[in-house]
Image (cartoon, rainbow, N blue to C red; front, side):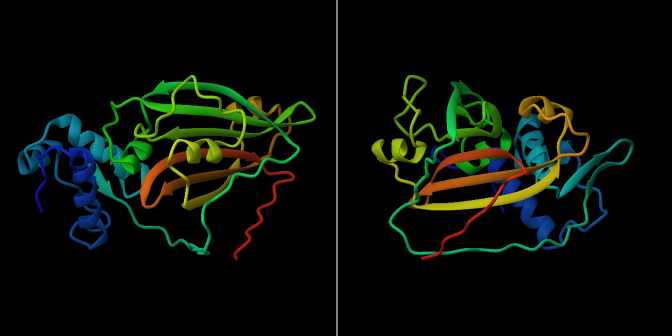
Length: 238
């Protein structure tokens, strides 16, 4: 498989990631084996070291490989996971505003994390709009959201996001019609305890990654953190 250097295609690092991921998943690169060196991949695909490293960073984030000092880049054992897929018929996904106090903390342009750039199919050097919000109960933060919006959406740092973000995206011509989410639970880090004003030694936090699309076009990528105490997930399939 070769990379496409034509304009309008996915970034080269993203194409390279797809190829290397496929080789790992189909067993061409087996568990415990050392991947070809950066130089070998540069020569095979005719790309720069930066492109190779960006693809490798995405593979590391996906927990498919790991860099081992003195050994090289090793293919990891794939963990057994259970995934549940929900599908329902609806005209659009709505973001519910309840009585909690949701505040916009900041709206700014920034370079996207590698997972966001891959989802949008853009270079990691392309600035995207980042929306940071928090939900407060009794003047204490209980939820922290960091949302990245595809540059094709006509919104900017002057857009008023004080209401429903999904309503704002719909007004901009990109209603969210499909959402994919990943939910995990971990113990809070020191930084998270400071963010949520938690003093307990062992406190859990819920992490949600949400990818929203509009008619198969990737539009938003949101990282959410919820204080686990009092967190409730309700799924309504119609």
